[in-house]
Image 1 (cartoon, rainbow over the protein chains, first blue to last red):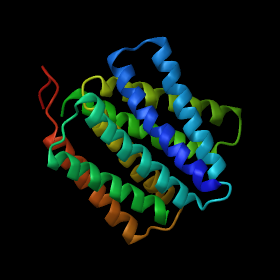
Image 2 (cartoon, chains in turn orange, brown):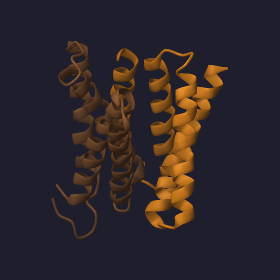
Image 3 (cartoon, chains in turn yellow, red):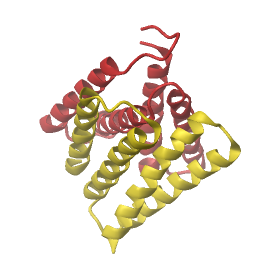
Length: 104
Length: 111
């Protein structure tokens, strides 16, 4: 059950990154409220999952799904650069971030 | 370095503030400071995202925020200094610098 919750938290974070794109293009109140709601849902689900999963594991999965998924959706939906060096450096950042969270 | 990259770094600094706050806040004042840090952090990140690719901004925000949080734990909250953590932070910084180098600067902003 905690695993479903943590994946849902990651998906809401992905949605948050997509909404960040929307807000950056159109700073309407509705978009800002949707962004806030999405990150609030994500953080709430993360804290629920952390009650039964180890904190490092929960953080690592959440960051991995959210940031990698968000970057991928940025490429698919918003035409962000798919250049291999960009993907490599994003992967390097996310890989070391996930590593830090696992061992923290 | 153009100012949108400085905003990303600023957002990460405030992220370290609010992550530490969520862990260590203990009274009304520290909780208010934590909420202010969350607001500033996200506002500055939104401004950075208006000119830089969001995937880039968010990856750097999350990465620098985690690295900073771990450094804050070591130096402010007396967690043990572990070489493997410092190594991962080094790799992370290399990734951020690389990503900065391959990202086209926003129009009208020069390094």
